[in-house]
Length: 103
Image 1: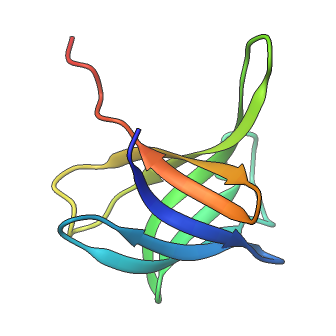
Image 2: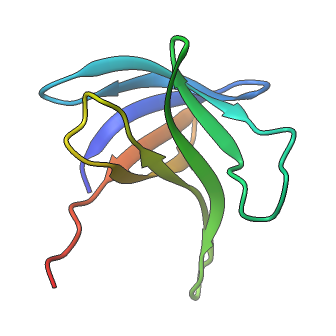
């Protein structure tokens, strides 16, 4: 799972940079304090004043449960939506993605 972003936690979410071979954007994860229902995103992802995606808190089940943030990035600069995950680590958080497996 390649890392495409590094972030630091803020009072309202996370901020950092998403960087790939074809783009680099400063990005903020802003907590959704007005969730309408359980399916509403926990975070809105913004690049400047533009919407760049949404994200939900999630937990990977197993012997050692792992909390992470499930991320969906989308925008006119992307050929299709990108699924990613934000994992907290000491001193920050890393955004990673994986290519979907072909059926």
